[in-house]
Length: 236
Length: 236
Image (cartoon, chains in turn red, yellow):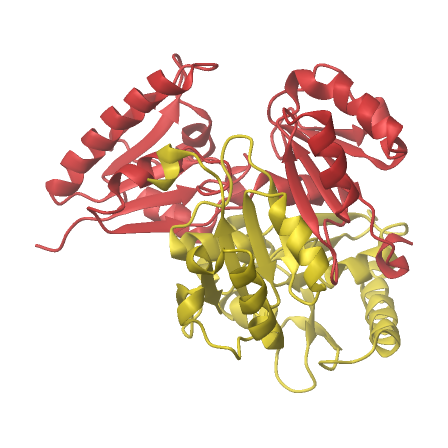
């Protein structure tokens, strides 16, 4: 018997139509799926692809409480990986669902690290929130020989400032409670007027506007976009 | 009559199954498609989604010669945008095909800049080559509060070095003839051993290996991946 395969599939930013054809096919034909979820409810990735999941599918749910420390989460990944391994050992492929892309700030990496040396793994790339947010704003990310930098909002101001300065395309993710500080930082850099905001990209509660019109209590799934390139052919 | 819409749709890195369901649907139902192509042949984006294109579709082809200067390319975008505008004025939606994502180093931006003020535009984000290459190598891009930087290989050594130093996740794109210089730079930074190479991601002629085993004559559609993060839970 050929060894069963662990698939890590990106489910994209939220709209079920922004799932790739390959991910959708793998989910539709899966007999075992796995995903992260909060204490209650099905989890974001599963919600996105709910229409592709069959009725008799076995579901491996890793419940990682929000705002947990690193150690308890690792125990949950250990247990989830062991359950997935048992399915693989029994010859059943496992499709793990990952919002966005599995390798771009994705918790799939914690499962991957535990299983990649023992089992065949295939990863199906997904649409990231970055390109989804740029699409909503019709906003250039990078062109020609521009540099793109992606920054998590919790970084300290000094790190944010120096990394913003050296790039033409800038994305700041995971905004949450950091919005007032980011607003002040970008104003001090003369960038506040040109910064765009997107929250809950591609979902029913999507919000997009300029930073100056954005709320101070942004959700975790939100981002800021800045384009500082000087190509008149795309910015005119 | 409602104004017709210009759609800019990402076709992903090359595998037709890495196209989103939305892009595929829009292409299947399109009466007018538009795309860039070289002097001869259909162009990469059209090749990816060939199976979705109907027989009686009108095709607007912008032939941008390789290695052309900036000015002649702009004339071609002017002419292409005018042809697209004529279709939109006649009430026909136009679906422009863009390999990867339309706003991530995509020439769609040049058409967008010419038409966005006059016509409704909708952009459908696509899977980028970055996440596709990471998937092939099972390679973490970024986790937790890591910074990601995306660098075009033609940048000078000093710019590459300082930007590589300040990020945990590093992607270097558009390798081509720059490989020997990049190899020397990364060796001088002590990063050569851990750098991964991918060419023609998700296509039949895909190549993936460590940088030390990669060819000096890399294609334009190739990249290097480096992860310098120290999270033992994903790098172990």
